[in-house]
Amino acid sequence: MKLSFTLCSLVVLIAVMGCSTRQPDDLGIKTGTITHVYPAGFEPVELAECRVPFTPEQIATGRYVQVQFTSYKLHRSIHVFVPSGRDFNNGDKVVVSDPYCIGSHKPEITGLAPK
Image (cartoon, rainbow, N blue to C red):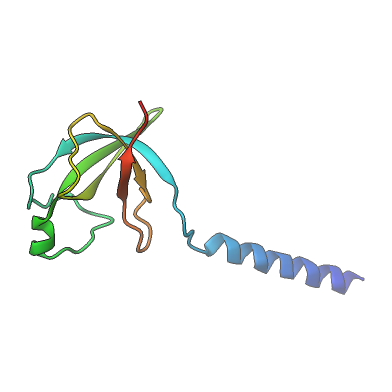
């Protein structure tokens, strides 16, 4: 009886550990405010943790914007590449999918946030 309980506990422990180390497919969405719109073709220097490699031709087809997220006392900002067909201004509230730069996920603006 004690052996079966120990084996059962070990199986549950391994299953839980496997779930906790697995990368999520959906990293959620966040609403943020655009604080800076960079000129077309300009690549910000502060692209640290989730730098997505673009060729100069790809960078010329769009622009980067800086999006700030605020929750209580925490202020966090990221840079998001926006294709040239979409125009945003400073102060626009936007919805960003995958805002955490984990693995191969890159942040993307999915649209304007409801007012």
